[in-house]
Amino acid sequence: MPNANDIRWFKQQFGQQVRAATAGTPFDLDMIVAIACQETGYIWSILRHKVLPIDRICALCVGDTIDYKGPRKGRQVFPLNKVDLLAAPRGREMFDIARAALEDMAADIPGYQKAAANPSKFCHGFGVFQRDLQFFLDDPDYFLERKYEHFDSSLQHCLKELRRGLKKLGFGSRTSLTDDEFAKVAIAYNTGGYKDSKGLKQGHFDGEKYYGERIYDYVTMSRGSGGSFQLAALTAGRYLVVARGGLKLRGGPGTGFGSERTLPAGTELDVAPSIGGDPAWVRVDLEGDGLLDGYVFASFLAPVGPRNGVESNEDAPEP
Image 1 (tube, rainbow, N blue to C red):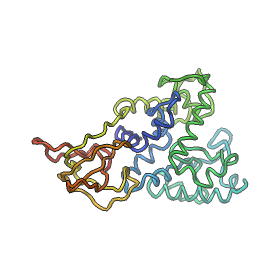
Image 2 (image 1 turned 180 degrees about the vertical axis):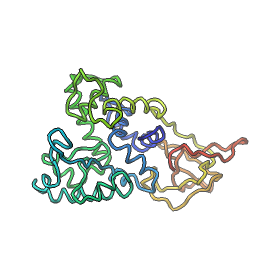
Image 3 (image 1 turned 45 degrees about the horizontal axis):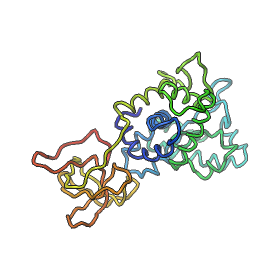
Image 4 (image 1 turned 30 degrees about the horizontal axis):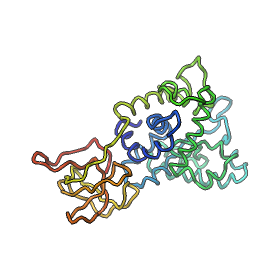
């Protein structure tokens, strides 16, 4: 289950994209974070600790291997199982992709290794926001071209389904939502509908809580300890690396950019003036000669001053 630090990392990586995509809608960053936490948080919260590019983490956000187990048991929509998928046009091609996705993800997520050991198992959910394979019949290219591996593509389909949920609840003209109302929309996103009599106790039940209850909890966490995270850009000046294990110097503003050097704790450097973009990353000059050497993660820097020392920052996201 994702925690506050995981949510902080997610916002640093995708916050700008989500804000841009939700502008002019009744949804906000914390609401979208809640969907991501519920759908694939158990995957990306583990993968973020590994040395993987962001695109690769997004590509590995697949899941749902449950097959049909009888009336009202297990999966009830296409494809019910491997046989059902293979019978569809281009079904063999899709199975191969869905099977490979499961094997790749299970290599890093132990909970899926048992399913991967069964050669008939494959993934039914694709992308950070889990678009279900039932849509393969209507939109095969999305899956066959693996568009779900790209965050923006997965986000757009998420928003499309959330808008559909708005209409089902009669919220189509709304410009804002309470967190409780959003949880109801999320239930429609998960199940296709919402029943007033059941409140938030609807959607997938994980043995402890229902989907609607989890969404509400995640929105609350994101707004609270996880924060409606608004990172202020560091001002230009002299800073000190305070990451115990050192700080990676990257070629661009994000973990998707390569790193050929790690700056040891205690390294002093100059932060260049901000030119916009993601404030989580800053441009740095290591030599003090006005030439830029790369980008570093801003959370692991502290202003140089007479009282500064090298301190641990173990609760911060990975640099």
